[in-house]
Length: 286
Image (cartoon, rainbow, N blue to C red; front, side, top):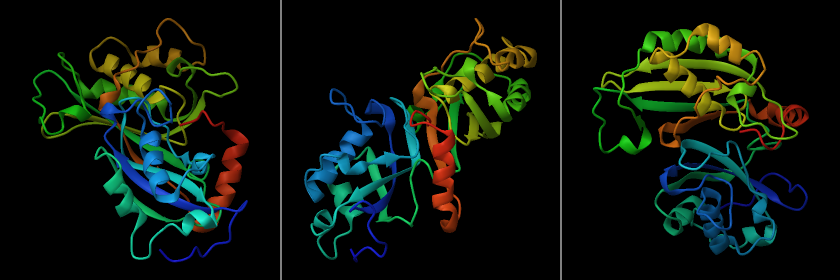
């Protein structure tokens, strides 16, 4: 690996990692001493390459996925010291070395020096998730069945599409989030789509600036309720009034959910975006 082109910040050099993982056997992304997590798996590999780090390499991730949730396009950053960088052998890529060390249900796609001002979480413009459902009459492919939710009843896509329109824009998702002290439940949902594939599987894709805890799976619960005739546009509007009520929707199982995209601005705007986000978000945003 060539020497970093950008000057260090607080004595460390920042690197960006793009990765994918099957979340089935992980207790979420964030490091937890008593459970197997994606961050824990990565850190075990990083320590073998760079040595121990009492700050966990200052790892920060774009979207902290929950237990059982998958990712096709996760992004994180690390801050490495000059001494740690000396441990990288010439001609040996870090991504390749990590993939030989860590378990096969996590793959590092790329490991490269970050652009100036880049912050994996704060520089992000949006996150996009897909939730996949196999309803009654659909026979899932066994090679991909662990990445979708199987249900025994039929869903009508048309009412799901109509209800989905209610979520677009700046909304208070208090009835669709697990509230945490010091955090806001107001989010700007940019896009939501509901489509049935040729094989019958239903895909719900949701993109927002950020998501509060359990928001995506709770919105999916509302759409599934609409698809089975158990809720209406009027009832969802009531839930979006900003007051939690008895009709808050079920948080659906994690296996159907996959993080599929993190969007960032142009290189020249990374630092400004990070500064803007830090003024309006908290570390509990996903």
